[in-house]
Length: 239
Image (cartoon, rainbow, N blue to C red):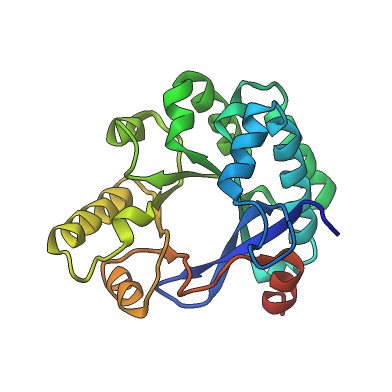
C-alpha cells in the first residue's frame, strides 16, 4: 500500500553489545528504488502545511502499537521524534501518556527526541512540556547535538536524559585527532551531567570501536543497521 509506514532503526549498546532500542522514523513509501520521499522533506512538508500535529500523533500511536508486540522482558526502548512545532500545541503530554496506557507500555521505555531547533524556538515552553514528560518517567533526548547554536548553555536548563551526537561530529573520527578529542570531551561532559550518549551515523567498524573505547554508551548508523519496516524489526529482535 502507498501509505505512511513506521520504520525502526536499531540502536546498539556499544559497551555490552546487542540491540537495545530503536529510533522510530515515518516513511512515505513512494515505490520504486528511491525508497520513498526523504523523511526530511516529508517532515518539512507536514510542518509547513500544519499537518505536523496529526503526523506526530500518528507516529506515537503507530510506534507504540509495534512496541506492544514485544515482550516487556525484551526491555527494548523506543525513540520518537517530536517536531519543534508540536510544543505549541495543547495536549501533547496527555496524548503521549494516554497512548502509553492504551498500549500498556512503561513510560521508561519511551524517549522523546527533540532537535536543538525546538529549544531555539521557544525554550521556556519546550522545557515545560519536557519536564512534564520527565515527571511521568519518559526519557528525553537532544537530537543532532553539536550542530546547533548555544547547545552547551541549554544543557543547564534542559531536562534531558540523552545526548544524540550528530553525524557531522562522528564521521571521519579515526583520521581526525582534534575531532576525536572533541568527541571524548562531549562524552565526558554528558556523563558528568548524568546523560547517556548516543553516536549517530556510525558508518564503519573502526568508528564503532573508537567510540566504544571512548565510553560512548550507544550508537546507530549504516554500519550497525539501516532503518527497516517496523514489522521486520519486531520479528528480528522480538525473540
